[in-house]
Length: 133
Image (cartoon, rainbow, N blue to C red; front, side, top):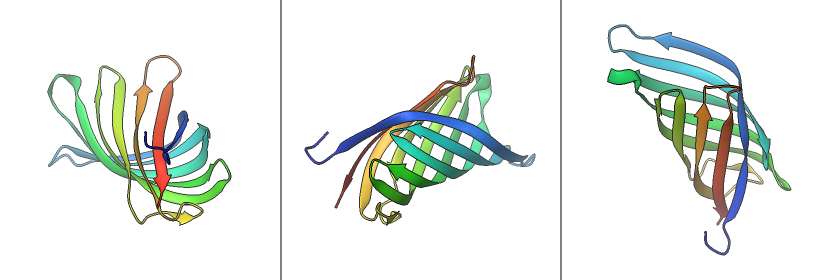
C-alpha cells in the first residue's frame, strides 16, 4: 500500500437474488443485493454473468454499485468483479471503476478481493485498498 492508500475490510451478506439461466449458452445472469458491514457500511446491487464449467467450477464477471459509507465519506461507486467458484468457495478480484464515484467517493480508485464460503453460515470477507485523486 502506498502512503495515501487506505484499507477497508469487513463482511458481505447476501439478502436478495434473482437468477436466470440461458439454456442455449449455459450462461447464468444474476441480480444480487448485498449488505456490507464493517469498515464499509453499504448496500449494493450486483449484476453478474456466470458460466458453470466442468468439475464443479464456475467463472463469473460482474459490476456492483455500492452506496453507503466508509469512515466519514458517504456516496457511491462501482466495483468490477472477476471471480471463480469451486468446492463451495468463491474468490473475486475487485477493481473500482474509475470515474464511477459519487458524493464523497468522487475520484476514488482502488482494488481488492472478496472471499465467500457456502459452507456453514455463508462466511465472507472483503478487503478494499483505496485512494483518491
